[in-house]
Image 1 (cartoon, rainbow, N blue to C red):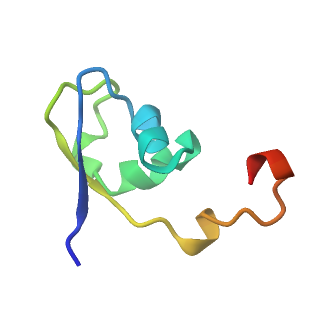
Image 2 (image 1 turned 90 degrees about the vertical axis):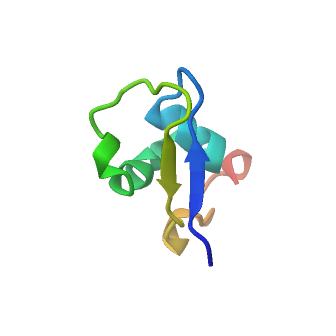
Length: 70
């Protein structure tokens, strides 16, 4: 299985990338942990390739969420 990657566009930030990938900006810590060499960047320039980790199964569950968040 090939590792997934994301190529940044000008103005991307950790939270906006996480939202684009998983529709949840609070998952950005998974993205940051997978890309320690880029932790000093707050707003990305275009063309930086980031590794996209698979989310743990427990992070993707909707159990216990109100209906409008499922």
